[in-house]
Image (cartoon, rainbow, N blue to C red; front, top):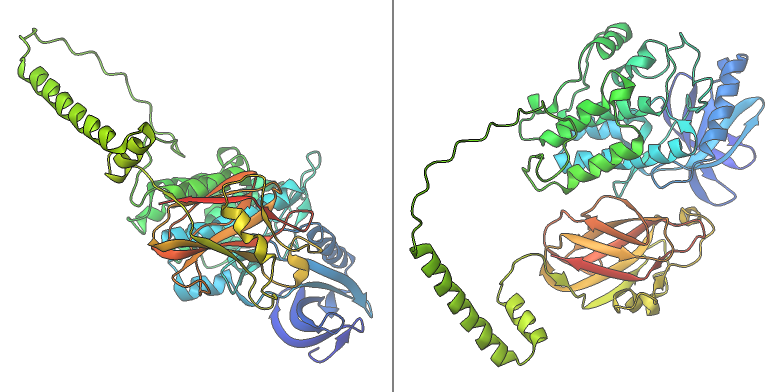
Length: 491
């Protein structure tokens, strides 16, 4: 079909993929002069009404979803009875190609990809849709590393009364299929949680959790065998990540995370873990509770001994020295405020340090025009919550398909390693990531996961030291314009 013109508008340029139900082409939209992806149903299936209806349903369902981690539906129709769907064209590759080339991935990189997929699926679930075929082949990666879920071909609306499928119907891909799917039972959003757990396992190990020779043997392993441990393959991985995957892949849906949002929250917590840290009962919540410990029996007290007076003498002497230091500093600074500053500069008390940005500029690289309200950029670091920098007004949350994003470049004054960056905004609902560079013009490397920005949102940063930090907005709120009222950071 390469070379054909569909609907007097879409010229098919290249076959980029094919499946059992349809083929996907890169096409040129002659009306808007841009590349699109066009999925065309196989001609031999046109006589089968259930396949035609499923194809039409995919277009209707996917068209309801507008999210930075879901491929956008642009159009649908038919030509000479052949059904087609038009999607945004994603320059890049699918996640399976990345796995085959680079897996096993570094732990944080794998978690960040899984988190983006989870965010997209959580949005679909919130709109009453479950994907049912979550696998690396159905995740596209943009050139800047953003994951976008695609192919809702077997997705169904969630109906709490009738379920999603008729009992006995098996749908999904065997390597990532949930036990309830493999048995042909009814499924819900927990099915996508299981499949995403299997995808994360593959990202971290380079292998699917239950390899096998055929669909039946693999499906039976999903039904009968406990979820494998990623730490058996890579001992350096976090126990918390291992526990999260095993919980997501629990055989009983009731033992999995209660929602995709909960799974995503745990993945964010895994990213926030210090390197090599192990979650313990005294400082954070474990994903999988351990066995109950018996309360230790109280020990008998030893006979009292006469206390030594030397510790008390040393304590009093130390307090006297410290008081002398405080008095000297206070005498030099002349005010409690300066005294606190002097103590902080001297390193007393430790903790994080607030970073005051030296400068800020709007960032709107090609195909943008480089303007993006740059005169207002300073409002984002002026310390006033009532002022803001704003994006231009766009027709939709994905910038009207004109560009991938816009942002602000913040100059921290010198190369330093920031650990967190906080945005405040009075236009909640846009998505952003943080990148860094030693140059104000880039190239920028991603140092945070994607976050949906609320009134106050803190990004955890994991990159190396850098002077310039980019707040990169990848999707806009419903009004088509985003405000950044204030940006603060800490080392």
